[in-house]
Amino acid sequence: MMRLLPLLLLLAPQQQNWNAVYESDHYIVKTTSEKKHANELGLHMELVYETYAKLLNYTKTPDRKFVIRLYKDHDEYKRNGAGGPALAHYSPGSKELVGSYDPDGMCAIMSHEGMHQFTDMVMPDFQKSVGSGEVPTWYSEGIADCIGNCVARSGKLYMCVIDGGYIAMMRTIVIQTGIRENRVAPLREIIKYNQKDYYSKNGRLNYAFGWSFTHFLMTYPRVEEPSKQIPDGKYKKMLVTFHNLMAAGKKRDEAYQNAFGINGGAPAWDRLEKEWKEYVLKFPDPLAGTPIEGLSADIDKLNDSDGVYVGTLKDDAPCAKAGLHSKDVILEVDGKPALHYGKLIPPLRRKKPGEAAVLKVKRGDETIELKVEWPRK
Picture 1 (cartoon, rainbow, N blue to C red):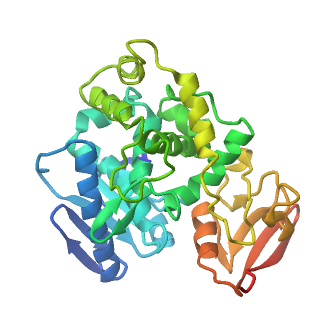
Picture 2: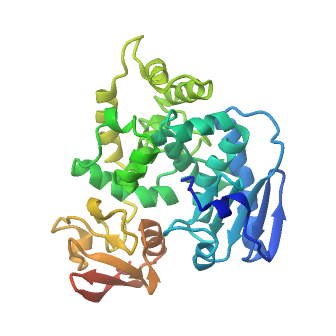
């Protein structure tokens, strides 16, 4: 998400004593954390840059390097412009990517936010159209999420990962719950949302839609294509055509008609919506194999940032058998805040057979602890 910040923050970066600076072909990473964290992020962003350029057909040389400010933790990041639990944001005034070190989500969220930085610096007319609403927000945020939902293997970046992808861990339970409970806005409506509508009308649910719908267009009918750096699904050509038309300055509705229209006719939005919903419900549960598998989201509480709000649970779901109740709020995992699914799921997926985790849970006016255990093999 490209954030609107106070004017002073937009006009000039905060003065800071940097512990280390890493410089690569396209990036300068300045950090108050350890040098190895700057190196890790810089190397990753070079792989991401290749994906940005290939995906958006950008072949020129940027006139300057992309700057990233990486703070050692979220508290320090908050003192330097962060808002809420997000790990990073792009500041259009200073043209800097700003965030905090996080062993689970740093590379994914920086890759997402870096997409906004990339388009703003090398495709400014396109980025202005994003801000005006001409380029729909589902697309600008969805394609950024698909790049963020990546994995690096043998010096190459593979996007649109499902199993183990950080963005997938953040979004899957949300969008599957939204579909099952019929809480997602109709496709014909949400594809016309501007930024204000997208963020204000249950923003986290809309983010989950944008990610999953873009992933669908990129990879359908496969859930993922692990052998391909950039997937080549059934509807990818439509998405590429849509992007090229928007980048060429075409009006949104004209671009929709030309990219998604069938044999010169109107786009088959109802068919696409049906296929997308059926497809998304096939995504694996990111909590599969953990004691709280089968968790659902409380759609009305997605934008609350004090914990993970539990939705309606089936009586036979593993998470219910483990002691969780509908309307519980998971506040912590093993003493660390669980502000959202990106903080809840990764530590649970790392557990091994015979280990346990302690969840701090708010239940009504009480706060309790639940010990959940992984059975021994």
